Each structure stands twice: as structure tokens, then as C-alpha cells.
Length: 352
Image (cartoon, rainbow, N blue to C red; front, top):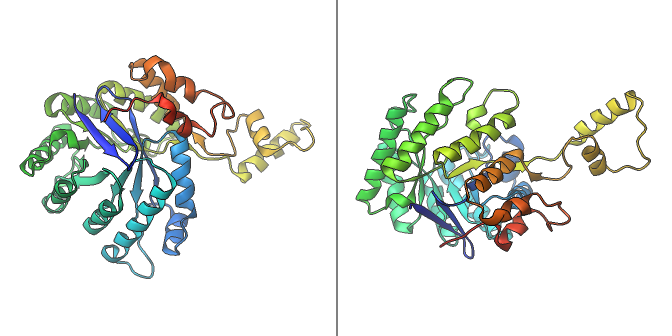
């Protein structure tokens, strides 16, 4: 069976057909996050620290590191991104032993991340574009790391799943020319938004089966793409992930964290409660209040998508004796500081 091994200095994550689903935490990425981008340009890494720890606590197996900030002071990412990538990788490694995924469109930043990373990180990513193949595959070979292969090429992203499969096959074959084995290629077949393409889910499930059966590769995706532009995105994601797992997908790049309830939401709910004539206990704290009224939590916690993944692992016999499911469902005070700590106690199989 195909197994893709990703390592930190002391910890191993495995993607495989007979392994628990691998969650790659996506939060350390300034794309679309103006506040984080501004912080990084100012040398403030407090949000990076919080996001790293919250994702590990929520159960992320690998942390994606993206330093793609376009500085106002210097818009050239070839100059600014490599040193920033080094800084973030070193910072995150100082906080957690979770393996890393080095994510960039800038070859210099990819190599900077590879040089700073301890162990065997996952590289994100290579495409079927000739220039990208020529820049990235030599890095994959030089540092002996696995790589995410995205199924688009110089013609762009095709809506035809046969074309996307052909691009993936091309990348696997070109990698073989460099001596890179198929088990170190993790193909992203590209999930289209279901709101724009009604067959998007069916397409990706069929593609994942072909990639597994014909190319023998592990797979990943940007899980939230499928629900883009639709209401109740978590509901769609929660259905999509177990279905993708059933088709053979072995990992996803996603947010494992349910974000804390904001003070604005708490204040609005309290106004509704007061207007309804409900008298709250004197001195009730915010965490008790949001729990009582089903708002969630004031602290980061595993998202509903993580619940769906853990349940699917159990149902596919990738959770021996249900240990991870039991650990996941323990109350926070019984589970210690959260699932991140509990998982190190043996809830997930690790085979190097």
C-alpha cells in the first residue's frame, strides 16, 4: 500500500490508504487575511503562534506554512518571502513538534522553508506547468521530501476530470524521471465549487478512485472549496469529507478549528435573551453563557469537520478500538488540554 511519510524532528505523520485521514491545518496563511498580513509585515507573529497551537489542539496532523505576504514596503515576494518563511518555520517548530508543509509559489521561499525545517516536511506544491516542474522537482529530489501535485498545467484548470487526471499522470511520470517515487507524490485533483458545478462532488470522487487505482498515489484537496459561495458551508464540508474518504482520499488541507464566539455575538445573544424576559444568573461568565445557549465556545476547539473525520476513521476501521473517537469526545477537563495532547497518547496509529 502507498504510504507518504512526513516528519518533524521527533514526530511522524503518514498518509496512506490504510491510515487514518491526515488533516493538514491551513490557518497559517495570510491570503485573504488582511490583519495577519499586516502583522507579519510589522514583525508581529502572535497570530501565527495562536493559530499553530489551536490547530494542533484541534487535531491537525501537519501544519501548512504559507508566508505569501505582499509587503506594502516591498512588493517583490522573491525578496521578502524567503526570509519570512524561514522565520515562521523556525517559530512554529519552537512551539510544536507537529510535521510541517512548506507552502509557496516562490521557489526561493520553498527552499528557504526546506532548509529551516527539521525532519521531512511536505512541499506544497508543484503543478503540471513546465516552469514549475523545472523549478520544484529538483528541490523535491535534493531534499528527499514528498510533494503536493496540483492537477493544472499551462492551459489552466480544466473542468474536464479526464484532463485533470492526465495532468496528474504527467507530474507523476516527470517526477519518476528525477527518481522521485509515486508514494512521495500527493495529488490534489482540484475540488470545484459545487455551487458553480453541480457535478463537482461526483467528479472529485471519481478522480480520487482513478488516482488511487491507476497511479497508486495519495491525495489531498482544499476541502472548503467545495462549499464556496453557499450557505451553511460547514454542513456541506461535513458531508463532503467522509464521502471523499470513502472514495479513497487520504488527506485534506483544511481548518480544523471552530473559531471562538466573538464578543459581538455574545452581546447580541444577551440582548435577545433579555428581550425574551429570561433572567440570567448573576455573574454568569461568557463561556457558561455560550455553552448554555448553544453558541459554541469562547475558546478555539475542534470544528465539526473534525468530528466527521474522526467518525469516518472509526467506521472505516482506521481507528483501532475506537481510541481516537473516545479521546475526541472526552470533556476538555477530562482530556487534558485538548485533542492535540490526547493524540500523542496513542489515539492515532503511527508507522514509520
